[in-house]
Image (cartoon, rainbow, N blue to C red; front, side):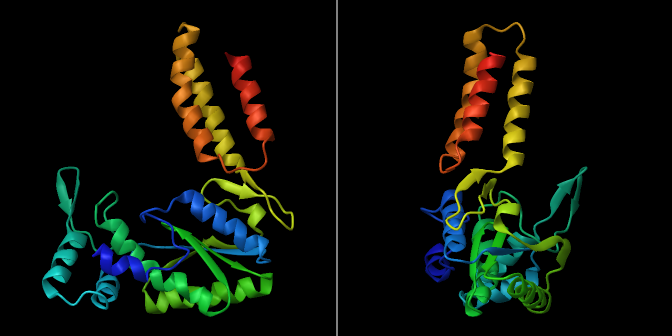
Length: 248
């Protein structure tokens, strides 16, 4: 199915696709803002409706045996407290087919803003639309909400939906500055999480040798550094470096 679905997917969709990563999505978001689209629309929605999803896949795959198999996969029950509960919406987290069917389902909502002259960038369920004004953002939110609710039978969470400046929102744990050519930076929540992880490791490691402590700290710190290697605002790295050295 990947060979059928993949070539049709939206250009700026980056989740669970070969050769694409969160970094591609973050850099593309920065490019949209640099191009003058300095307002971002974020819409939170509910789980995938199985009937609508199968109808979307049926536009690409005509073999009824494959469609029946996919439906059975989607409706496979979940074991909770020793009892099997029937799944009526959503896809199984971690399932091998879930990324493919999710991308298939979200492809049309990805392309809808572009038809209206706006730009979209998505990684998994983190979907942002970039527009040139707050008024345009309001119109996009109304039209996309209407599309999701009427066409795809999704429930939009209005409390989690907003029109805001990109530097006041975070995307995949990154944020950006307000400059005309914005620079990427680490979102404050991500810095806070690393500080908490370091604090917990050092608290748990009282009495360890310095060598063992450094060995325990290395994987999360290196992983965090690799995740944010595209950040262009560097002061947070200097601050964290000094903090960890003082603790050691």
